[in-house]
Length: 79
Image (tube, rainbow, N blue to C red; front, side, top):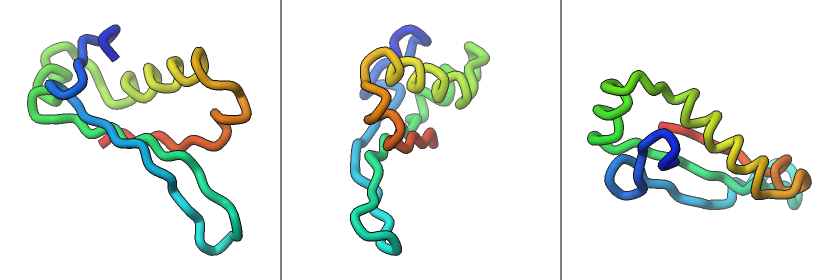
């Protein structure tokens, strides 16, 4: 995320959890939730960065790091 000048703890925080669909047995997804802090929202406004750019950055990172089987089972949210 430093590629778009957002640093963890100062501009955003994230949590990794597992989303479970209780209606379907044994079906769950890894969930990555990115929450922008006030300083991060202000920096985004100043730099003209939108949430889609953050989502695109996270998707690009996942593509480079994770195997395809794992990527199919991840949910990413930007708040």
